[in-house]
Amino acid sequence: MRRSQKIASGVMGTLLLASGATAGALGVLKPASAQAEESLSPTGMVHHEGSHTVSANLANLLDDSYTRMADVQGDFVFNQSGTTPNDELFNVFGTAILTMCSKPADELVQAGEGKANFYVNVSGNIRQTFSVDVSQLDDEQGVYMGCSCMSGSPFGQAYVVGVPLASVVEMADLEEGVNTVTAYGADGFGEPLPLRYALEKNALLVYRVNGQELRSTADSSLQLWMPETVAHYFTRNIVDISLTKEDVEPEVQSVEPMYRNKIEISNKVEDSVFRVGDQVSFEGVADDLGSPIAAVEFSFDDGDTWTSCATEGATADKWVNWSFTTSFDQPGDYHMIARARTADGVVSPLSASLDFSVK
Picture 1 (cartoon, rainbow, N blue to C red):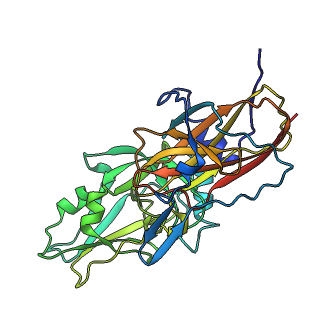
Picture 2 (cartoon, rainbow, N blue to C red; picture 1 turned 135 degrees about the vertical axis):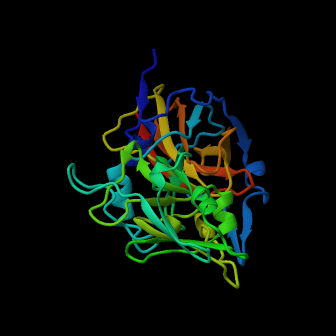
């Protein structure tokens, strides 16, 4: 009987896959191999974002010391239900991405401290300002939602519960021509959004994250979460929602072109020993913020051939948590490359890779 080996997951892999990645969640797929001349053709490998042209072509960089394995076959599973624990999620918000994303706040306080305050003031170009406790509204929703910045790796996903922003907007008596909504935090931070965009995306005013009610030592603990939108708009401690009419509707910031279609391998290989014939599982996440991930692809010969694994049914508002299991029939040092393809034909401009050895 062949032994089964699972490369030790890094922090993100453990957090995501332990919480919902059951084999067959969306089916076990037998991947189809893609030859180099097809997968490295111009289609999908070069794309344009505004004035930018981004190429995802790969160069052969491996030296002869690596063992190459063409047309790798294996078992592939994926799901979109993984979550990042709250302490990890908000620690990231408050440190590494402080300059790129909205201002942090103490959403999570020690037991016995803070209070749940979900009141928000609604003002702007409306005929009468008002305040509302959004947690008392009747149309509560719960969804999985990813959160990612304009650059860097994907960093968080949660099951959030709240009320659609649309519910509050419907309560306002809008003046004619209102086209902009801005959620302001207690610190004055706020990023204007086209009102139509926020309503189309079903922006949520969130008061519970991964089953935990948000609390704050002062002011509101309410948050704005935006599907398929960069974390720059994920405002904390919302105290005011302003509905205004602007001469020019604000533009929505999007992911930097070089960071579209992000993919990450969550495994670590330290202290892992793999033998010929072992079933070895690789795990990771893929995310694009705007276009669904259509496939995750793997190469063990430096991009000469690719194994393409479809992620049929994946949606753009959540990550794809993937796992690929295969075996190796000869010892050596191996180099795996992973990339993703989106439904609109974009190949990961920045691939992910992992080196490991088989004895």
